[in-house]
Length: 362
Image (cartoon, rainbow, N blue to C red; front, top):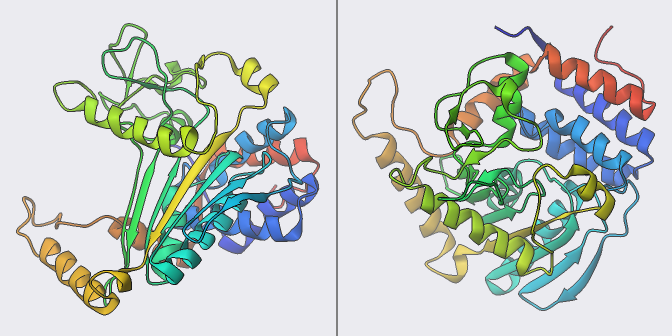
């Protein structure tokens, strides 16, 4: 079992802020980015919070991520907008775009905002949850630069994990909050398996011959060969492949963001071309359909009915999307955020590389 180090929420916020301040990011951009990252860790999505910090540092070093970007709206209508992120870290244009989509939805019922020329933005569910907090339905999607998902029947990877997030507000219950990769597992889970030394389940990753791979240490960081959601054609991998391609179209093709051909091993090419990603956000106001109160009340009834179904195991009741994250959030707010020793040391190395003080410990 990997050694775990628990860090207080406030201390982690200050540590990440120190790194971005050393980069020269504006206070506003730091505040936004740190908020998204730490909230993600509090929700128990360890692969997309501070665990991404070393990856962001690497992108900055190679010029793929600009600490001082010129983020701007390049097209806009009452219902839509397109934002150019100027190679910003993804959290800042992501929050900007989702808030703009919410504003449009509140005005005319629906808002759709695309972002191009961006970077990794953390957990997609954070953005869709911004919408539910404002009483509207939210959706968030993102493309990924690393082609690590193998399409059904292919020997080579092409797509990223291309996640989908959907959050819908309720009245009594916490919102229904779905945040899922279109691969069988998120790539960050492979990183966690590497850090902990735990074996991966069969069906997460395949080798060059398409055979299951369970040792995360043998999965190259630039080419993990994840399976599309479903794992095999017989179990529905063509559906995960189709969903992943849908996300690619919304986030890249629609926004004017180039998509492939891409070589999973050619990191030097991606660094040279300053390859970026696209995002897509949508907000829908229930008031413009069946009515806000009626919608939220029926969301309560729907989730209550599902949780009330008889479980296979009485110790594992039926849940709906978001339940586990809400429990993790409440627990970590009280006890702190656990980091593996490997991640703790990664943060130390990022501080050294950026010139920021390491304040998590000795």
